[in-house]
Image (cartoon, rainbow, N blue to C red):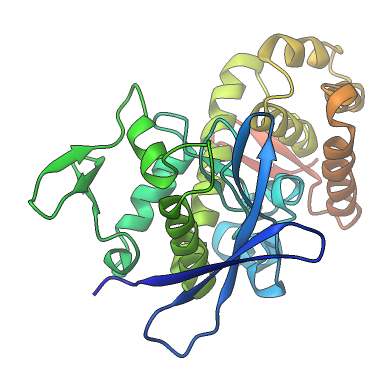
Length: 301
């Protein structure tokens, strides 16, 4: 039987509207879903709350994923402070979730791949009984059995609006979907493992593409990482990165150049990722170079 969540809201001492949910017919306590917020002319939720149980740390996943577990960590910190339940529904993506902030507005994007894997879990029907996968596409299935495709190669608009009908106001469907995602990630280790594996797959696959463009063979991990982070956030483009890498093999200069991309508007983000990279270099974790043949990183000679 599908889970049902009871919702409530209250206004905090600082005047913010906070939303909470509780799993019906259970002894569980209620949990925080998010604050109502406005961004430009849009309204939605944000949840940046953390608990030690729900923060991504590379060391926790090193045994399964090796160096890649650390490679994504600076981005995870910059995107969400590593929160597995980080949420926003107030921008053009309509619904963004997780420590790498998977965004629903990209057709065949990271959120789509993430959700497809979640829907394959045995308890998926507890959380999203209306969503099913047919021919590797996500469908909404009505009581009548009618199937409505929600995403395709060209668009994810239907899925966006399933999770968040509009950005005109915080709506009940938006709250229910947010509560489902937060409760699932909080209470299911397999859910969180999928979030990790999809994040690693994202950077792993992206790096293959970036190598074809920039020929990254032998480049230090920190240079490769910074390319991934720039393009993940969107603070620079291929031409700007190519210009930064044009240093006649001086990798330190290339790294410094990459750290300056988007500095005017994203200085705090750049400081955050640099800080974590410095920490990972200081204990030799990040002192590796890219090997294109295996699409992985090896010890620096």
